Image 1: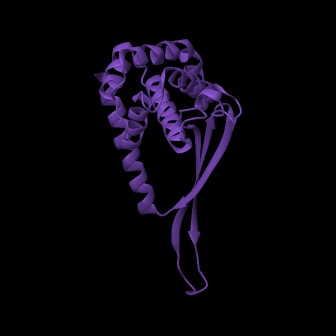
Image 2 (image 1 turned 120 degrees about the vertical axis):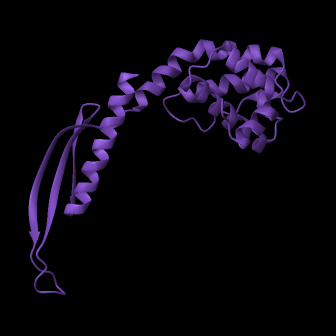
Image 3 (image 1 turned 45 degrees about the horizontal axis):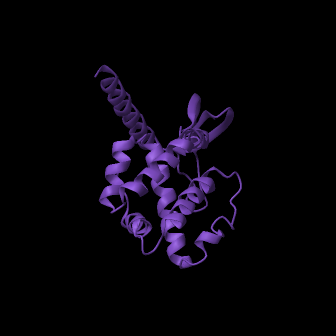
Amino acid sequence: MELSESVQRGLQSLADPSSFDQSSFQVLVDVSFRSLLSSKGDPAVLDQPELKQIDQILLKQCHTAATTFILEAVKQNADKSTISSCLEELTFSAERIEIFYSTHQKHKKELECLLASIGRRPAQINDVSWRLQYHMKNAQVDKVNEPFYSISLKSENEGSSEDINFTCTMEQLQDLVGKLKDAAKSVEKASQM
């Protein structure tokens, strides 16, 4: 898994027994999963007795790193070997990897449902309408006589419909049509593989 440097540093701090003893590690892992699954962002999520002795900045960095890693693992549908190897590279002990993985397995289905509900699909275009118009004159020049197109895309996403309206010149429309044809060819090639 590709992780940013700040996430790697946070996870390395979490793996360090001098920063987090076994009980505070377990509590932070549980809290990280709970905070992701909570419907309301609880500002007191890190106010646990086992976490009181830990520097608050370090605690927040480790919490952020852990939640980022959890989401990335669920998003990529990472298996035990992927999670284990990634955590081993970040100096996690075998015992801490097992704690993390067992908690991950316990909450994996709920997190998958959560990520699926966020809506990762773009809007689907159902209809297009257009109209050719002429710009006859403007405030600076009496005669302009430029044609332009008014285009309206009817789209739908998660049951709600939306209109996307824009105008463009003949050249801009030709460029858009060319790009759409290129995209259609790419999709066609990909589906034949």
